[in-house]
Image 1 (spheres, helix red, strand yellow):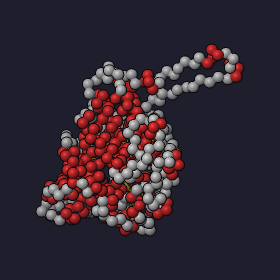
Image 2: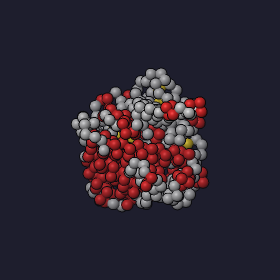
Image 3: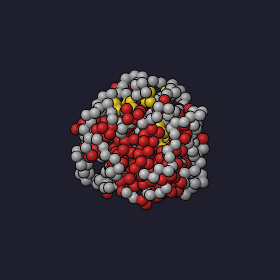
Image 4: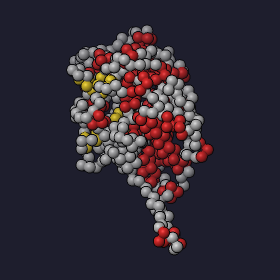
Length: 507
């Protein structure tokens, strides 16, 4: 049974009096609420419920209707669309950039807000875990496991903030008046915090959970995200030490491998498989009618329920959320050899429609809620990141190429007697050639999964590629590109509220 989070709100009802009773002071003796923050954390079950409430914020990142702002708008558009893998049918700010990408854009405000909700909830529970009374936790190691989960999720929030904004306040403490108006981070401080949190989480999390908790983050999840964040930091800081640390983190991942079938990574019936390291749990494969309501805020809805995420953006079966279909760029389609078995599982070459997640039918609860998990991190991603780390740190070029070939071999072996994609020659020593192989393989293998913009952004920040309108190869050749778009604008609402926050350059 998947890790489905049912969050029960604790509602405090305030007593009120009216003039008729104002003379009778006994009427003011209102009993205290049945639950307070002080009294609530008194059992493992209470901690479990609170922890599930932190996971629930992931719904804000990956749902197309639920959001921190409550407006039914999808934050995920702000990091799915800007790369060179997807293009849209209408000119959207995240694709054409120009003066349309500005600090009042609602999805930016929502992603910022969701990230800090995630941090704040994680910080609250971390504080309760650190100060929990003896005897509350009775299950061996569970306290450490729970602490690891909270560190991981807080790290993920900082990772997202860095990849979208570049700068934002660090949030590592429960709310207090002393940290009411924190300043911007600088450099890679957001990524530094994510790395610190992932590293601690990896030392605390279990190797696996029971079937009833399938989908909770594990040590493998943390080592995977730790290595990924280290590669990202190494890209911009040119740090061999970070590349080496990333390789060490990846080497600590155990018990996982590539699935035999590439499509298993996008099928609702093969979620949380051996290749998966971190998934957004979108709901059970079968849900009863009306069992979920995607329009409710993340603290009263089952975690997950993609809210027609795939239906909205990929399969074109309706006009939900405006019906703005996201299709493959010609660059993405042309990156495949025509005989690559991944191509017909990824793109409809007749119309460039994306087939990932929807090829075999998207499991739906009603007409709104998609139940197919978002695969946030899988082992193929790790192999290609490890190849990049080996290459960029001056390691064995043949070892780096072999890792790329592992991914290509899985694809080739899906067809009996298959010959494509053929292995790259392990005798190649030209670093630029091999790096191009890695970039292209990441596009073929991971395109349309939500991470391409983060790759493009870090490579551009590290001066490994140069961006211009031709690079994106989208439906909109009039893209107005300038390098300041590598960091999206800080929401104007945050600058208005916090005098210590500075706007990103160019906005």
